[in-house]
Image 1 (cartoon, rainbow, N blue to C red):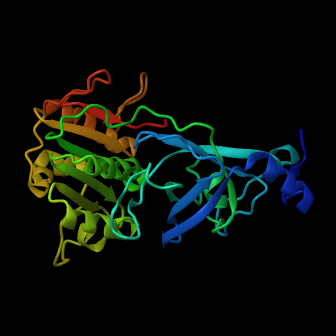
Image 2: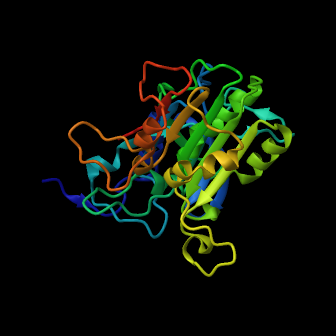
Amino acid sequence: MSEIVETVPFDAKRIGELKNKYYNATVVHRIDTHPDLARFRIRPDKPFPPFEPGQFVSLGIGNWENRVEDTQEEALTEKDWAKCIQRAYSISCPMLDEHGNLATVNDVDYLEFYVTLVRHADPGQPPPVVTPRLFGCGIGDRLMIGKKIVGHYTIGSINPDDTILMLSTGTGEAPHNAMAAHLLSNNHRGRIVNATSVRNRIDLAYTAEHARLMDQYSQYCYLPFSTRDPENIDANHPGYVGKQYLQELFVSGKLAEMADDPLDPKNTHVFLCGNPAMIGYVPPGAEPPSATGMLPLLKEAGFKDDHDYEGPGSIRFEKYW
């Protein structure tokens, strides 16, 4: 068995060699929402050709990089320390440039990532590798970007008057922001509803951009919900609303009411991204989740879970599991 090394066994020269071997992109901006949530703008050395909003790419960082404090410890062999570990991330979007104009994924020379710091793994899982190191990076630091931007979670063919319903949890909002900017830039006339649910409202990183978009485009609607703020859990709170899960909001009709749209499958396309429990996809042979996800609820409402169908009433969802 290889010896476990507790500190980086390489000198500066060796680390420089590893960076030159693997790294091909630079952090050009970082926007922190709070210590565990940030937007990273990373510029690849070689620009990517135009790609579809909603797609993803791998983001890599070397095991030799320092982790931020208060994250789970790792036990690495000397061979492990020389590895550059990659994870797939959906590409987000600034949505607006510094002048307040629409900015799509293909209007900027960087890739934006919306990332949560994972400090500790779930029981029985290996320690998180990428985010504890990524959150130690600042402007000018180097990283690795995968060779190709890929993925089938894209807008596809949609009638310009159809309704778009995008449901997400947490950083699953990222591809939907890219889609929303693209639809607006292409003069989509139908309702665009971008709804997301987070634990706490401090976990919303794009509220200012969404507010400006709603001021500029009457067809755009951003609906943020939370589940663990005082108004969600304290029945005596003057603004008590209970835990706002997307599934319950959809079934109760509150989502359609707040979206000011019937969300009828006859003219509505649904996109789902985020927590598997919210999506409700059950892989073959797996046990169904304890709580009902959106997929069965949407099917009951007349939507279709058919990846070969792109017409009204279609359901599309992103999954990395």
